[in-house]
Image: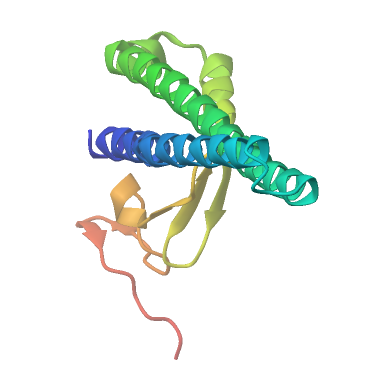
Length: 171
C-alpha cells in the first residue's frame, strides 16, 4: 500500500508540474502577440523602419513559437502521465486481485522456476545479508533471518538432546 501510494504521489506530482506552468505560458504568449500587434501598428503608422520591424517581428515570433512548443510538450507530458497513471491503476488492481498463494500452490516446479526467473534478476549473497535484484526495480537488502535462514557462521548441531549451539573447535 505504501509503495502504491508513493507511486501515485509521484505520478501526480509530475503531472501537476507540467500543468501548473500552462497558465503562465498562455499569459506570456498573449502578451507577446499584443506586442507584435503594436509593432505592426507602429510600422503601418510609419513610426518604425522596415529593418527594425523585421528584427522585432522575428524576435517576437521566435519567442511565441518557443512558448507554444513548450506548451505543446507540456500537454503531451500531461497526457503521458495520465496514461501512465491509468496503466499503473490497472496493474495495481490486477495485482490486488491476484491470488498469489493459489497460483504458487497450483504451479508445477517448472512454472515456479519460470515465475521466479521472470521476477528476480539476481540474488547476491553477502556474509551478513542477501541482496535481491528484482527486474525493473531497485535492489532489496534482506537479512537472513527475514527469509528464514541462519546468520552466517552459525551452525546447528544435532545430538541426542536436540539442538546444541555450535562448538568452537579452533584450539
